[in-house]
Image (cartoon, rainbow, N blue to C red; front, side, top):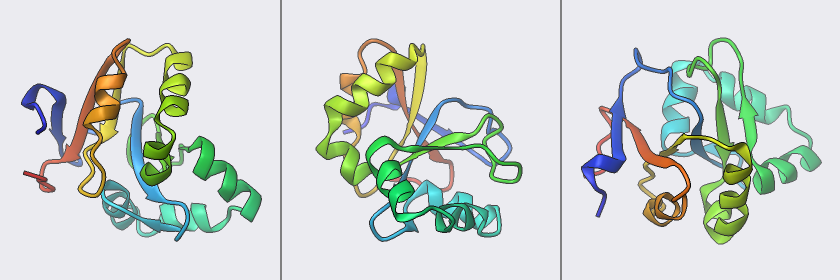
Length: 139
């Protein structure tokens, strides 16, 4: 069960959080969860960016994530796309990447499909919070 202390709900006028890690299906090349709403509100710009990736780039994005920073794609400082299915199969690798970033706080999408509480708990060296849009309750 998600602790209220670990869950933040935001709306589309409060997009100054950083870094935000959002789920994206890199195998099927389609949005999931928050990335669906980001794509919808950016008129497909997120999907357009992913469609430009070569097969090698897509493989890299699946394994390492990809940073998105483009005008019109919301989140003022950009955001990271990760395939949460892959991430949960390689939690230690993800934890090490975040640790090397030397961050005080990180925000992970509160996914309907994947239980991210284990990842939040493993990020004990920083403050980790689950994030969702306020109209996308998972409760």
